[in-house]
Length: 152
Image 1 (cartoon, one colour):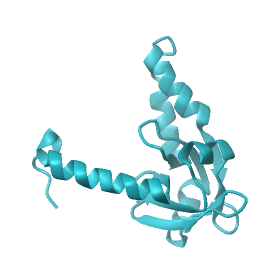
Image 2 (cartoon, helix red, strand yellow; image 1 turned 60 degrees about the vertical axis):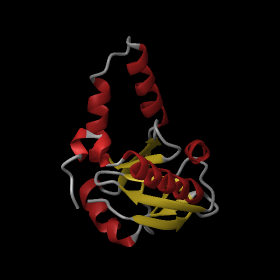
Image 3 (spheres, one colour; image 1 turned 90 degrees about the horizontal axis):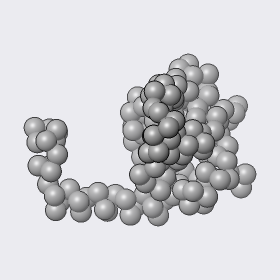
């Protein structure tokens, strides 16, 4: 289970170090193989353990390559999908095109989202959190039927 927000740094080669607590489970679950792609809704990256990504690929495969919107989704997610392997120090290289898409520089946030990580620039993450809090405050939980009965 991938959870929590972790402030980490990209090194000069564009590598990020996965927090130690996830390294063992990721090696067990997917032999340290992950897939990184863009998020089509937010200026961040999505980082999936290989098995979780294969479920996404299955869904993408079921879409029509002749329907323009479905084809766009396939093109964006699959076209940017890059396999990344954890090295012996628990680091993985984030390709330059993906770093550029998400505006990643030195300070980044690795945010667990159950079956994947989101990879944000620190500044964009802080802005997103502020936006999310303001939206919840102004819209309330009632804006989503599924959240009406949700409690913490």
